[in-house]
Each structure stands twice: as structure tokens, then as C-alpha cells.
Image (cartoon, rainbow, N blue to C red; front, side, top):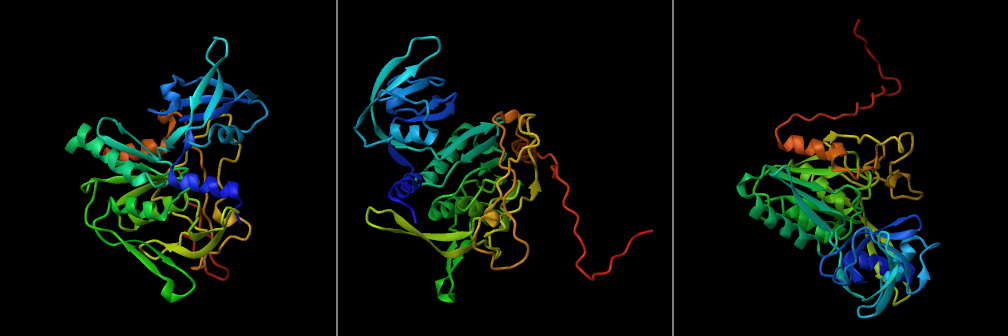
Length: 366
């Protein structure tokens, strides 16, 4: 069961738009710090700048609020006014009046790496994701053209989202074949989704980055491109959320979230409680302050009462979810770039030794 607030938050996540100010923020020393204003939004038009500190919202101190509570206060109905108190550098704090507008979340960001590699970061699968992907690919065509060596699709720490967007993104790199199937309790509840002709990458190599924070729709994309050998998967094992959930609104009282089916990759693999294993396992190097600390997600298999994997076998899912903020220290991204540049890349983690089954004979070389 989701209460009305949780249901609205989920709806905002999947729509990819909300009434707000248009700033990416974080919490620092008990106040809101602006990471960056989004172009053509109330915040950018009012001159809000990166590194500005928001210390009050409509006269209420931020101190004591969580980041989510502060964000909720900045969001609201389109057209509703709000006053934020801003501290900029050594200047005295000042009040800035703004009017909330419709903000579209950028689920896709992109840039060119090394002058000839298209890098696409998908942070969630919203209604705008396919449009963002096509915009990115068009930008690469214009900037790099036929000299592009390949593409990196970064799905790390992407919790998922809309199934139809996962299908569209997968379809963008496939010419034919099954993308994903969903199977309910009965045989007549099976649905199959197939690719249509047309590859936005025009056959160029693709690398997909995943980690323990890659779940649901992210795993559908990674699994489809892996099974069709259309992409090389680099990183660590994904979360393992392979269940289909149907949302039933309860007329303003929230909604029910029912698990109705499982996802299967084109090769018939169930993602549920197992996840997607990387073709090349690359663990990140942790900075000193994180060494010895657990930076992993425990995965779907660790959740109490989770849906089991129908295929049996050992369950798993989840792995390190750490991504260095400094790209120069990002071992997984470096491995993807190296691979697209023709450099041989091997896993930097030794596979676990397989123990013989009980009663099995073992031989040793003398």
C-alpha cells in the first residue's frame, strides 16, 4: 500500500515533471546547496547560481529539515509563489521571490568522451527518456558524425521506471528479436515485446555500465542488449528487481502496488533476485574515507518476503553502488572507454572458487 504522498511522489518520478523551481540540490552543513540550476526555469531566470546556499524557505529555517522535506517545500502547484533566502559567498543573505513552473526532469544527460565516444547517462526511465536518448544521438551525429567509435550507456544507480521506456531504449539499439517478456501465473498471461528495425547507433559498438544500484528497467535494457550480444556489460552485478508491479489507484487515498508477473530476458533468464552479471567485472577503487565501509546494495534477494527466482538456483543481486564523483577516478568508465578504443579489458576481480558438490569426487594435479 502507498499513501497519497507516496503515490504522488511515484507519479512525479514516472512523469518526469513537477511544479518547482528548477534546481539540482544537495544538503551541506544543514542547509540546501545548489548543485546547478536547470536552464530556462524559474531558478535560472532569477539568477540562482551553483554553490548558492538556501537557508530559508518562505521564512522557515532549513536547519532541522531533511533534504527530502526541504525539496517537498520547494515543490508545489505551478504558478504558486515562493520566497527563498539565499546565502552567496561572503554576501549578506538575501530574499529571492520566484514563481513555481513546470519542471521537466532530465533523465538523460550526455557528452562526448575523448572526442569520439558518445556517453549517455540515464538516471531513471521516465516519460521523457526516449526523447532524451534521441536528442543525445542526434547531438553526437552532429558533433562527431561517422568518426564516433561507439557509445557508453551508463545505467549505474538507475532505479528503473517505466517498462515502455526500457523497451524503447533497448529497441533503439536492436534491429530485431525479443526485448523482454513478462510471465504471470498462467500461460495465457505471457507478453512478449519485440524490436523493430532501426538501430540509432548504426551498428557501432555499445558498452552498458551497471552496478548494484541498477534495477528493474535498467536490468531489462542491460539483459536485452547482453543476450543479443549487442553490448558489452561492464561493472558489477545489478540489483535483481525482476518483478512486474501493477499500480491500482484508490481515488485520492493512495494506491495498491501488486506484483503480477516476472520479467525475462530474451534468453529466458529471470532477473528476479539474481540480477544481471557484468561481462567484465570492474570494481571501483574506494577513497580512504570509504575503505572498510559497506558501499554495496544488498539487492532484491536480501529483502524480507521478496519474490523468489522461479528458475531456482542460488539467488543474488546487488553489489557495490559507489561511483566516484571525479570521472578521472571512475574505473568502470575508464574500462568502457578503453574497450571502445580497442584496448583489451579484463575483470579486476577474481571469480570465486567453485566448491565441489557434496559427494562429488575431486582430482588434484601432482
